[in-house]
Image (cartoon, rainbow, N blue to C red; front, side):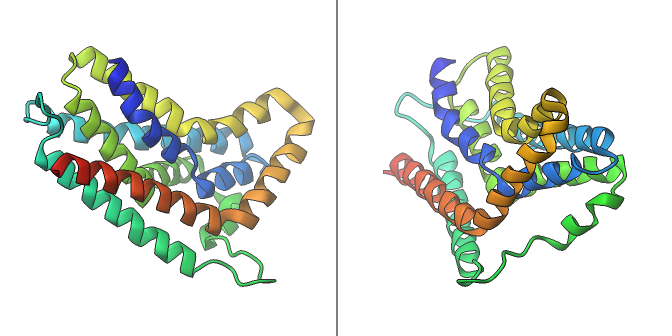
Length: 224
């Protein structure tokens, strides 16, 4: 189990460093519906990770994803393809970065957060963790790595839970700050939001590139 945890830690770190969801929940936590929408978004974000991880793990169950000589070709090819997907996403993000002196643009839906219902906040949370290309790739890679570890079902679930908690930790952190810091939370969260908004595109592009290289490397190593 320890080996499986070590294997999924880089994927959990990659999933945790997701700028848009962090900005989204910070914005929700400074609206009149902070408690209901913030909680709903956080729950949806956790569910998104759990959904993809569980589906891939179930589909991988019983398959020959592990052997004495290391990953099988199938798992390695999947990781290689996921790495290439992230590489394409990194190039797209980099090309779309703000020019010097230009204000960073946020997604249009973030401008309507004040009008969100709890159901919509929940749905957006699920989408940002389950469908976001980077998080989707990390969840699939995590589930494949767990399947490759050839450990008992109970331990597989435990490793997946560790990934989910770590992957969602940066979105859950603003909720903890909101609850714990009271009136000071708005100032603290506002500072986080400003920094993340200013560095969103470049940070995302660099992260995508780093983890694209990691997955491509693992895929090539498994095929060689």
